[in-house]
Image (cartoon, rainbow over the protein chains, first blue to last red):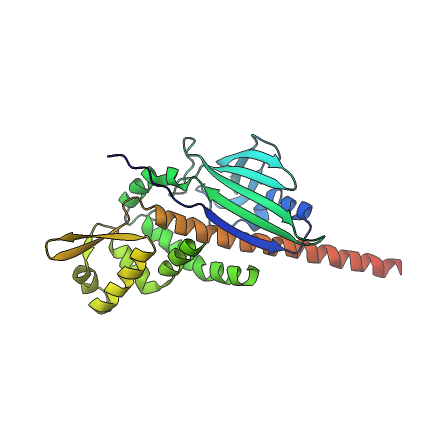
Length: 166
Length: 116
């Protein structure tokens, strides 16, 4: 029996005390400076992340050993208003060219020096079939235990982050 | 956001995370889950109710017992995880934007000092 599972997109936002041009620039050109270092794909430690500044550009990570791993692609490049990225990582944090989920980021001016940054991560139901595979790796570091460990480490930070930026 | 927050809250409690992890290897009854945890059965039931309300687990009747399992598609958990991931990432991003802004202001102030 095939069932279509719909799942609500992840939606979150922050307000930053900066003009939208600056907010867009830090999000894209500066992604390597704020991306959580613990979340990366390659075997070696993460050096930086790169979003190529154009539609169809690559979105990838570069590791300290010089290797590169794809995260996805740039679908919409519309500075300083909007960015749509293709997130092609499975729940196991592995690149899968056949998995396409979208991350849309909008930069909304709320004054000369204030920007509301809205992020939506959608098409999460496409990760569904892979969720079953993930559950097979019961005790692996990439499985639920590792995931929940990561979750436990960052839950407090996330909560505090929300409180201070809400 | 209400659902995401419920999922987030459901997994933020360490005992509830333990209960949730106990279901990784398949469906279990309240008694089975409670057996290797230092909490009472009613407490486990309460945790399961919260997890169920958050869409992380489902239950079914099996004879006289009720068996709890992780949601068969696991999507709610993935979603909860991505939700917290983006929360952490955007908080770090906002800090980076504001750090840059502060540095620019300082440089501007310093330049003004110099020209004075």
